[in-house]
Length: 124
Image (cartoon, rainbow, N blue to C red; front, top):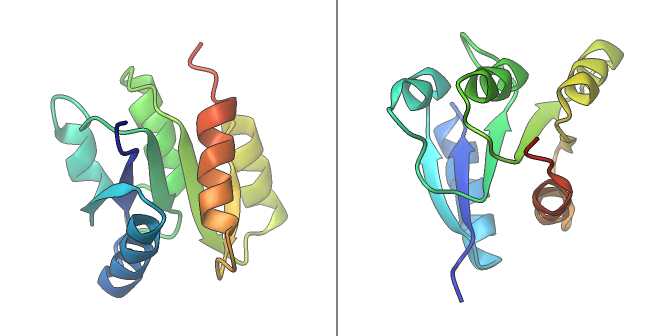
């Protein structure tokens, strides 16, 4: 059985390491990236089952990053993480069809969010 792979994009090194560690404990393989723009410039996204991106980032924010990837034809379930998301951000996430998970991520929130994104993703 193949281990599910997560592409994790977080500019905060400590947060990225903590999230990667937690996901690896759950059985995922994690490929971490600090910059979304560099990831989008690659000819192809690495093989992955889900993109997990921190919304608060310089340059492209998390939802913009997901939208740009989709505009480039890179279809991949995604989850966006945000601290204290306001109504406008929640509406943007809903319009993009991206689950928005509020930090701090308590309990199984991240794993459950990834599972919902992967199982409910419509690549059409």
